[in-house]
Amino acid sequence: MKRILYLLCLTSFIFTGCKDDDINLFDKTADERAAEAIANLKADLIAPANGWKLRYRPENGSGSFYVFLKFEDDNTVNIQTDLGVDDGEYFNQTITYRVDNSLGLELILENYSFFSYLFEQDDATFGAEYEFNFVNKTPDDALVFSSKTDFSNPTILLFVEAAADEADMLLGTALAQNLNAMSAGLGSLTQSYKLVYENKDLEFYLSLNDMRRTISFKSAARKSNIQIAQAMTFTTPYIVKGDSIVFDSPLTGSFLGNPITMKGIKFNNLEDAELNVCTDPIQVFSYAGVTSANDLVQLETTLLDASGSQFASQSDFFVCPISNIIDNGVFAGAAVAEDITGASSMQLYYNYDLGGDPFYAMGFFIQNSNGTTTFALREFTSTLVNNNLIVNFAPEISIFGSPTTANIDNVNIYLDAMTAGDATYILEYADGLYEFFNPCTGWSFVFFPIN
Image 1 (cartoon, one colour):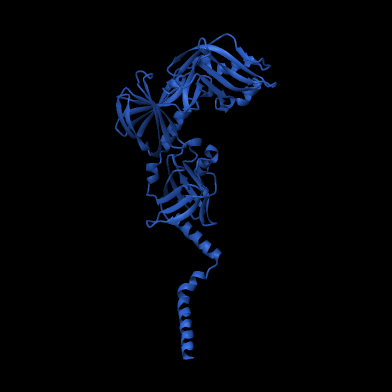
Image 2 (cartoon, rainbow, N blue to C red; image 1 turned 60 degrees about the horizontal axis):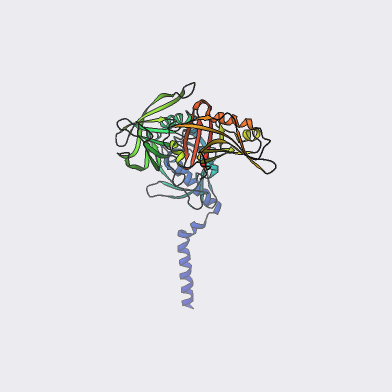
């Protein structure tokens, strides 16, 4: 009996002893614990005097953005970036945010912002996000988040406390504005630049994607003769640091006898320039800079494209769906279909083998309402000067295939839009895609090779 009483007393002592240490873990409801976690994360977000610095890469293969965020207790956050689209709308924004608790702690940026803009790109497939799951706080007080909807490969974001004036040093708003001005000058779909070396007989033809933060080197050529060219397929993500773009991977190699190593480019003066290919000069720009190897260079907006000049070596037959016809930035497919009933695509035959003399012609492929097809083509002779295609058309349009009730004369509307003023420039839009662009009319036609 005494032994039983002793055990009961011991058990009572154990439970009594545990009460003060452990029962407090369970003296709050789930809602109270969630509210406390939300409050703690919000306190962490607003704590730094200079806010947070974030190096944001929306997806693998894209470049990165420096982003500075200053959270306030009133549920507003100031976001600073150097994304230069929309007239610098995303350079400095203040929006509302919310810390919530669903399956875990979440940071939600409630209003349209830099993050929302990136989220929408490429039909919302770019990989950007504006809702983030809180992961943890690191030993050095950085905050780790992950993108909420990237289930297979979530983007990890590291919020690091920003130093005073760090945003002013790292954000390249002036650089972004200048690059935007350069890309908008011609009105072409293809961002056509050349990077010209001051002390070398060398220039690179390249494109820049400011939204994805990637730079693609398409070819190298001699300044003295761009027909002497070397094809390239080098693309690297980059980040803007003040007045410089810094490559994730350096460009290295020998290009037309010039050994090159380039890790980035620092830019300084943006200067006005003109292209005199139309009746009125086209306002463009030249951006002076120096490479990481201390080579003086000029980044120039250009109509020249060494890759475009090689289009004829890719195929002798090209097709442009009418959806790829653009009038000064506006898709013109509906207008084409109205003007030429049944037209589905443009066709370009360039040195095409019909078993006799080489065949040169361009025009439209027409699907008639009775199930037959018509080829309304205008033959031509041409001269290719670098990537400038100068066309001399035959007097009349030729009909191949079945007769059609379409207004064939309207074919000339689009042939003229492409070739007016002998100002057709062929630019490599992407691998296997060529933009036939006329800067004097503002029309673009994007063709792809068939064979």
